[in-house]
Structure formats: C-alpha cells, structure tokens
Image (cartoon, rainbow, N blue to C red; front, side):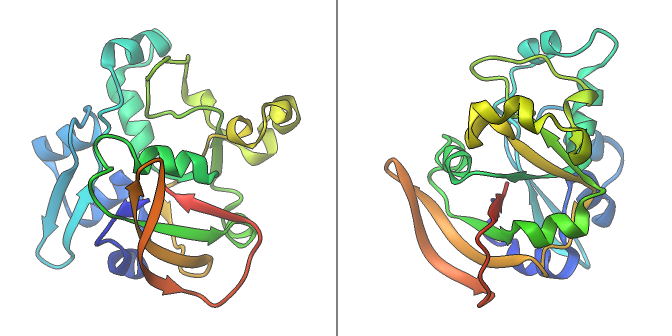
Amino acid sequence: MADARSWESIQKKGLLSTSSLLDLFEVMGHERENIESRRRPESVPIVHEKYGRAVVRGNNPIIESKLRAALPKDFTLEQWYRLLNKHAFFWLTSERLKTLLCARAYRDYPHAVLTLDTLRFVRRYEQKIVLSPMNSGNTQPIAHPRSPETFKKMCDYPFQERAHRGNYYQIVELAVEGGADVTESVLSVDLMQCAGDGMRVLHNMYESGGTGEHTTRTR
C-alpha cells in the first residue's frame, strides 16, 4: 500500500525504504533527523528538483511510552525508528491490508495497492528478505517485546513453530532492506479505498496480464 500518486515513481526508482528515499531526495540535517529517527505523527511530503514529490507515511500507531518498554534497555527509540526506516514493508494477507487501508489516518483517501507474484519476488530477494511475527511499527493495543532479532532471515524463521497460528499470525510482515525493484513481479496496481467494512477498487492503474496464485500486497 503506497501513496496514490507513487506508481510512476516506483516504476522508475523502485519501491524504496524511507532511508533510501531520503538518500535519493538528498534530505539531510534536521529535516532528515525528524523523518528518519523520530515518530512521525503525520505523513511527510518531500520534494526534489529532479525527482519531484514523494510522501513518507506517518507512524502514528506508535505510542512511545509503550515502545520504550517493549525494547531492550540498551536499544533506543531512535535506533528502532532507524531500523524500521531502512526497510520497505509488505503485507502478506488481504486482511492486514484492509486494516491499514481502513485505519483512521488513511480510510478517507485512495491509495495505490500493488499485488505481487510472491514466488518470483522471493526468488529474487531471498537473501535480503526478513520476516517478522508482529507489526513492528505498531504498539496498539499491546506493545509486544521487540528487538533487532525480531526480524529473521527466511532460513531462520520459525515457520513450523508458528504454523498453528494460521496465515494471519504465522508471518505478519515481510521486509526488504533498502527497498526493491517490483517491476518484474507486480501483477496489478489498483487505486483502492476503504469502503465500510471492506475495500473498494476505484481504478486499475496497471495489469501485467500474467497469473500467479501466490500474491502479497505492499504496505
């Protein structure tokens, strides 16, 4: 799930993590510090003379008092924000996509939803993918303990241990450090918006014409 106007940029530059996007847009100093290592109560637009406009989403679901208690004593809030901002995140179920799409901060606006051929994507980025058993950017309603070890390579992830939890909880997040080129694995791009207790497709912006039974949606 990305900003409604981001598909053209994603085609050209890839689906970038926040830190990679800040590098590309040459955002430095105090402005970068506020975006990369602080809680963002709202989405932040950034502008570059060459690359145009981009939007860095807010992380308002984080309550810092809860987050601080959930982190190791020797790991700071700033370090956690920087760790998250190094990665591009993907949802693995449509239910979790719907939860974000219909969250208070996003439900009144359309968003670009990219559907990927998971198998093709994973084959390309297997060595860079990390998996998480929790929503690492959320502390509501419970702030589960977390640390850098929360994110595990696919070969180290406890798939069987968590299999009984079902698809919704076995793996919560898939992330790629730095971001990823999704042009070879994207099946469709739809402009979508929350509609009551579901999701509504407003407009199809791209269709690959291919089929793939394994799909995931970006956050």
